[in-house]
Amino acid sequence: MDKNTVIGLVLIVAVLIGFSYFSKSEQPAPQPQTTQTTQPAQAEQPKEVAAATAPVDTVTPFKASFAATDSVAAADKDSVVVLENDNLTIHVNKHGGTMSDVWLKGYRSYDDFKNDTQAPLHLFDSKNAALNLSLQTTAGTINTADYRFVAAEQKGKNEVTMLLQAADSTALAITYTLQEGDGYMLTMTVASRGLGRHLAAGKPLGIHWTQKIAQHEKGYDFENQYSTITYKLTGDDTEKLREMGDDEEVAEGDADWVAFKNQYFSSVMIAPTSTFRGLHMVSRQITPEVEAGYLKYYDARAEIPFDATGKQATTLHFYYGPNSFNLLKSMDRYKLGTKDYDLEDLVYLGWPIVRWINRFFTIYVFDFLTRLGLPMGIVLLLITILLRFIVYVPTRKSFLSSAKMRVLRPKVDEISRKIPTRPTP
Image (cartoon, rainbow, N blue to C red):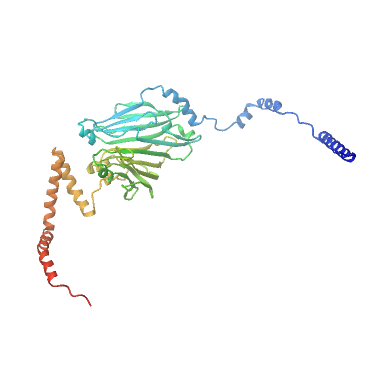
């Protein structure tokens, strides 16, 4: 290394050291820490000033409040409350506070009939059906399925109130009233008990209802083709999803009710004093190869108005029962407003002309004969004979003409072979 290189390196190092020294001397002196002085000053503020600067809403969030009481309620070992009348047995599960199981007395599935088991028909159970209610709170969305309710008020076997109570004594109350005697209607009311401070103003009650439809009859195909989601548009006709295969649909307007329909039985959710908004329905086929014993998976989501002040409860009706035309029509006696339920639309009566015959003749004769205790085969045979007799008079001439044509057809064909038709020029 030559002399000039060494001198250059020394000068570069000297410049760097000098630059670092002068830069450090020109930096501003560090500012004193203010944390120690500002905190005591805030603590010494007058109470009036502290109150004015504090947050306006210091209430414990709604969701967290319920979490505090959830462990207390969990000490209750009984998980269901039983409601019962002459026709129904309903289990209301404390986990979620909604119906988990429904049995229909007086009916049996094909398997129970085949095995001579005297068990009521299990319409659905907690493993294959769920009803979740959701509310918008200041802390976010809460779902009733996430909480355990307390059966706070029970009146015999026909009424119970399920409470989801917060630490500040506010609560969500769900009351179930089962029609006494031989009824098939369950009334459900959802009400706020002081929840106005927790709930977002003007937000509706969300509903999410699911059910796997069990196969109750012997033949899968025939039962499946009469099972579908059916719904009633407000002030309009009854609509349904496609029976075969998967289907999904959003109602074109508000709906009065939505039904999870099997061939012979239905679960129907009704809005007696309001309407379902944004009704979104999904039907998925379940083949025997995928899971035996089931027909379809139903899913319905909707919203319904909810009064957070608690002045007015949100009311729902649930029909659990057979698809009997006259029985479904009689459910209008439970309506709370002026609109008819029209649940009888769940029963398909055929094309217009056939519908009138079935509506005003077949149904009444069928009910009369079955009340006599006759076997179903004899009932169907007698109805067929009666219908043949009724339609014989107006169709007699047409029948005779058809019979004559059948007799003359061979002679006409023979003449046609002997006298061939002249080709058209």
